[in-house]
Length: 334
Image 1 (cartoon, rainbow, N blue to C red):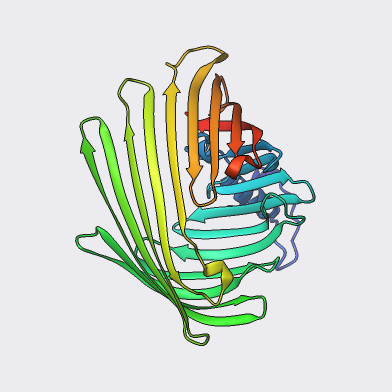
Image 2: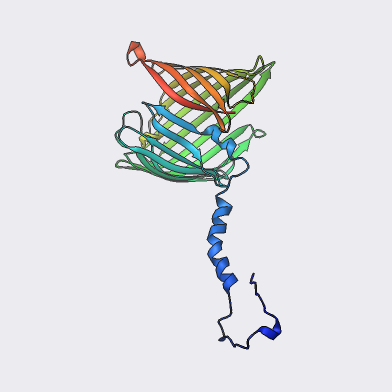
C-alpha cells in the first residue's frame, strides 16, 4: 500500500519527475518492515506456550549433567532447545515435532561416562497411519539410515501394522533391511482402577547378511485415584528376543522392568510459594539388577509454568555394588 501526502493544488510546484522513478517511500518502508513482521508472526507466545513446560526437564545431577532439556521456544511451531553441561562436552541440540514430523539436530547425550557427545541430524515422519519416511545421520560409531514405508490399522483400529524398507550403515557394515511391526493395546476400567495391556511384535530382516531378529514387547499398567489429589500407578515391561542383527543399533535384548509411583498434589493456594506435590518413586530393572528409589518435593511458585523442586534418591547396584545417593532438580506439569 502506498501513501501519498498531497499539498493543495495551488501550492504544489510544477516539478516533473523522471519517468520510471515514482515516489515509493511507503514501499521502501514496507520492504524494510517485512522481515520484522515475519519474525513477529513466528516469535510470539502461542496460546499453549505455558503448557509446553510440562515436558521440560531440568538436569542437575552428576549422572546427567547440569542444564535444561526440551525448553520450549516462544515460536508457533513447538521448537525445543536443550543445553546441558556434561563432564567433557556440551550437550546442545534443537528439535521440533510438527504434524507427525520430527526435525532435530545437534549434540546429544552419550551415556554416563562417554567423553564426547553424539552429533545427530534427523528428519522423520512417522504418523499413526499412512506413508512413513526417515533420514538419520549420526556420529560416534552409531548407525545412520534412510528408510520409507507405510502404516495402517486393522481390527476396527485396535491393531497397527507397520512395514518399512531401508538401508543402514554402521561402522564398516552397509545393510539393506526390512522391518515389520504389529502393535496393539487394550484398556479397561475396574471401579477406580484404570488398566492397560499393550503388546508389540517386531521383526528385522537383513537379506544381504542373512540375519533375522524378532522381538515381542509386553506392557502392563494400572493407575488409580482413591482420594482427591492422590494418584497411584504401577507398570511392568517385558521384552523377549530371538535372532541376530547386522546393524548393532537395531538389536535389542531381553529386558524386564517394574515401576511404582505415588503422587499427591496439594490443593491450589493463591500464594507466592506454596506446596505443590510430593512424589515417591521406585523402579527395578530386573535384567541388570539395579533398583532406584526417589522422593520428590515440588513447590508451586507463582509465575512458573510448572511445579519445581528437589529430588533425592538412592541407587542400589547389583550384589551391593555401585550403590550411591542421587540428587536432582525436577519439574512436573501443573
